[in-house]
Length: 328
Image (cartoon, rainbow, N blue to C red; front, top):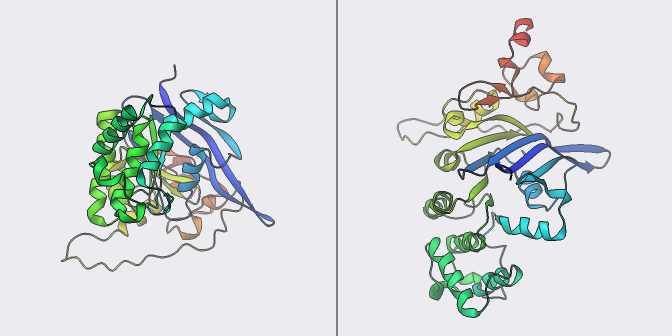
């Protein structure tokens, strides 16, 4: 039995747009171990490839090249029964707590479908006990929510119900795509707390997709920061955010306002230019047009990941290549 839960190898996704190809993701690699459970954060600005990774893992889109292995088995080669088991072990919590519900059905229907599809209960009493347990884990109670329609619940309640639905099938991995971006700030802490408890108490790992570095810092074990489909920097979340090494990540972290009323924020968020570096997989560093420390070598050569610290801290930048810097 494989010691890895999820392994993504050289994953590349290219979309056709007219005569041009747009590289949404290039040579992406990721490994999540079975033990202990962990929260791996995929972060970056809009269009960086975060949701592409989520959709690939969930099987909504297919790879252009590369492979995704779950417990050592290639997901794309699975039989119908193996894919059914994969979908049970890999659950999803999406960004929009309003759009994932059918407004014509009560909340009870969400859980009944799961029980039916995965044949989880032998009778109604057993089904009810399973549903109640899942709701209790996320701080809800059946009598309060099951007979209501989605519009009668708050955004935070709807999102916690999605977390309960995912938990109920006892998955090994939950793909959480921006799960707190559309709920009030006061409710984010409760949802993040649910994720932490599911990791620690139920040994469920998370692939946490976000653009919010503060929540990544708060709950993430490992972080991977993307820029235009490539990994800029990766490592332990606190290491990367406290001591960023890649010029893009440094700018990203510096753009976050300090929570101090005595410090005036004079930063300005500069939108990226047209993605001229993204139309071919053979192009150089994607950050070249915006990089304050760019070199000629960067324009035609995509940098690999270089070790820049302890605990697996790596950055994709030629500033950490001694041979390139010697010639600069």
